[in-house]
Length: 551
Image 1: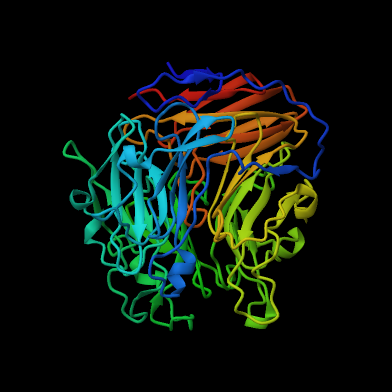
Image 2: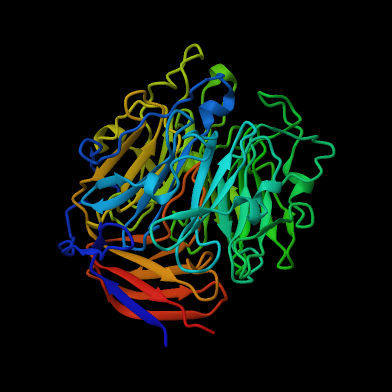
């Protein structure tokens, strides 16, 4: 039997050793916000417990210092809400913000064993942390990338609120790339565990003979623990991912930024979308035999400065589209800007101009999300860069709030939405942190007073549904599974992906806006192994967990 469990919003608690505190479920939705209505956000950082500064003890001014950092998002203590792990340079400890409920967070990194990565209370230079259940034991482990010669780390979740550094035994320390930036997990070979893709912006590579580029790592964990092996060459990734592009550090460099495992051709096998700088973004299709083929159409995939990535079905036609954040400013020769690639039967076409999402200034991490619960995915991405470029506003531009009008077009309503920060944004998490039935925002940036902002969604929202999947075998987060709902004749699709927005990730719980509809007519789950189940007449305004039948 397949199990479906309704959750009444478990929040807070004192970690996995304490019983969770049951919260009162939020009231039914049904607000007045209609299709395309502006959402309303309020800065909830004061009083949240989130307060830190991103920085470096001995700054070098390198490109990687301006790009590194980030945040992992997930329920590491299994108490039912979304926690955050933040890396913030080497100026202080890493931060593990445990969600106490009601948008209050407490840093428990020291007691969890995650505060420092070097002896003597010091830190490596870190980036792109990502939560994922690497060993299939139903709790979230943690990967953290290192840059400027710092090593990457794998931390195993002990199940009691603490983590163990298993980096040496994991095989990750064989990765010699100078810089690692962002990470993504997915079961590309469908063997029941989570494999790893790592981006390496700025790492020197010979573009005529790149050799082993160290991007794709196959999960070979066993009873002895978490293990990965490098399969970048035999998988076919290394052969074409390094291009001859005249980037800021020269042509002989890896310029990959944000990877995503996602099934873009609907064959049930995760493909790889690799967002990269200097016209190096690639599309790799899974051959279903452990190898990939580069099918990038360079007449379509034209983002010149690709940095952030979001994958979702923005036009509700049943396949996965792709948004890539970029730079738009003719002063520095970047005249292409953001790109929205619409999926047409497994082939991408450029829908940016008709959608109206080109101009986001200097973009970084991005999300597809339904900000106003109107059944249509909106786009939000952070932006900003240091003010050393004449005739630009990169250091003071508002982050765009592209709200879907329900017809394939978007309006930028940043002013109306109340998201008027002028920070140098980098990472982004889009999640219902307070479990009140709408999607909040957590942004990492470079503000010297507090390097993060937490925005609470206060939109007069419609109804909603949140769905979490519990997979079988080792893929306990059901990465690659799809959830499709129909409510009032509108179809919505979500796929479970783990990373990467750009040095950041969203949790795997999937959120659906339902507008005025009080129920979902049908909810269909396609599990990673291709098996399907359908539920009818699912009531709105609740959080559900569906568990896959064990083989």
